[in-house]
Amino acid sequence: MSLKIQVKNTRHGNPGVSGWYAILPEAEPARVLQEDITADWLVIGGGFAGLSAARRLSQLRENESIVLLDSIRIGEGSSGRNSGFMIDLPHDISTDSYAGAVEQDVLQTRKNRYAISFAAEVAEEYGFTQEVFNPCGKINAAASESGDRHNREYVEHLKAMGEASTWLDAAEMQRITGSEYYLSGLLTPKTVTIQAAAYTRGFARGMSEKVDIYEKTPVIALERTNGFWQARTPKGSVKASKVILSVNGHLQSFGFMQSRLMHIFLYASMTRAMSTDEVNKLGGEPSWGVAPANPFGSSVRKICGVGGHRILMRNKFHFNSSMEATERDVQKAVRDHERSFQRRFPMLKGVEMEHRWGGRLCLSWNNVPVFGELEKNMFAACCQNGLGVSKGTLSGILAAEYACGFQNPYIEDYLNEAQPTRLPPEPFATIGANAYLNWQEWRAGLEK
Image (cartoon, rainbow, N blue to C red; front, side, top):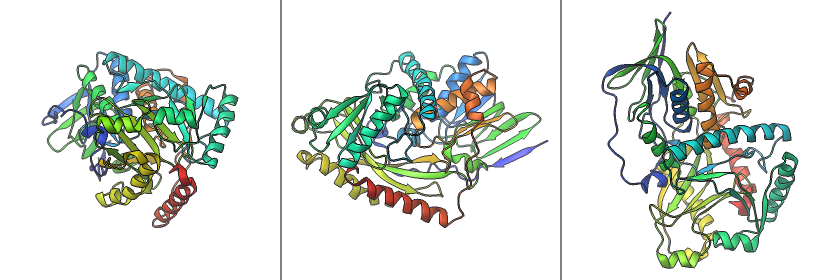
């Protein structure tokens, strides 16, 4: 029996060049697939999920051949466009304080830490510096009374979970960030900060001895015949026994989960490299990362190392069912980034934003992933629900294990999840989603 899938949209749809990617040294030329090849395994997508799936396959099936395809350069896509937090604790962005039911959050924390330990092994094996992978923790920063209240509520939730945290007052926040803007902060110690593009690019480079990786090689069609999958690309093809789709929201482009996935763009800006005088005016620690006490506020990172001392601001949510945003959408976020930056860093008035970009999240209305066997010998590790670094890594690991028949209790948890809920028809989905996002951003107030 034959099954044909025509891939409808191979464009990545993310506007601008990510600052994480732009400040890296120039990459080696892409290896593009230009022939017909055969492999035991095919992984489609080179983000956190795809890279993790390919590495786990190489551990479980070390004598079998693995091919990974990405439609662009690894590190350029959504995985290289986030704030760079590999978060261990509950982080539900649909709530005011990230928290859910205690038992559920305890389990999710265990899963996230399973993924983080896997990533730590990657970092050690491939020699990542602290600039690329830093287990330094994360601060939930509060700029308002409501944000401070959210943090205090989160402390109680963490205590109920048996988790430690450290309360930071305004003076301690200024010591760390150099900014007088924050009233308080909550440090949780087991989050890892990453340089998002360097992490994914370094992951791919380190794995290239065991996995055949092709970039700038979009899949334009998939067909199953005689027990094998064949992926057609513009200049070649891959024939494989099993396929793992780690394409997040682009699962819809492959014909699955139509009208069930929400595509949310978040926008970021990164400053130019600051001068020594500007760094001294700012003060604070050389590098740090804060997430907002309200999920709809601003994430801020201060980085140093390759590319110099820079600050990243990330906020502004935008729903787009087409999975594509434009430079115009980025420019609409500029005012928000400029205002957020000046509120926090009035001493840096002459520091301009050098890089601006957008990146896409994939969520489901009922906050569940897409995981499991979609078709015979085709497996999915998609829909990370706004926690792509940790959950993407986890879903990639588990998809590989499930496809290999490896026993892991977390697999059953994923398989027992409900299907993503169907969204309202257009234009109601877009109108309703953006109205909700705008309202939540307004409620965030000074946290934004």
